[in-house]
Length: 67
Image (tube, rainbow, N blue to C red; front, side, top):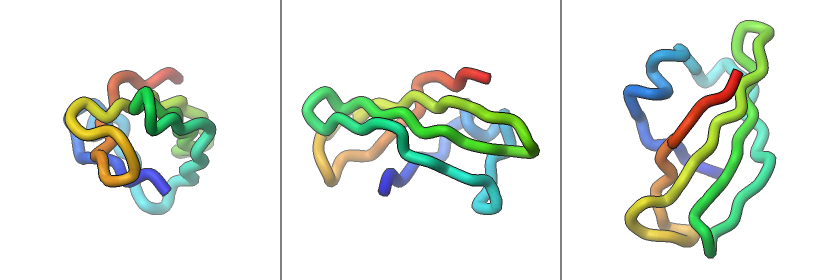
């Protein structure tokens, strides 16, 4: 499971725990992942990176959201 860091980018979309989050890809070596979010009948693709520490203990930070 990916734990997302709170960010200004994500707060603009109003995602909540009631939304459906599906992990589509995750690469610990590159520190990149994609999560699909279904929010209010819309599908978003959230691209994530691990800018500081890569691996299972790294924090995921959103880099872009595609609608």
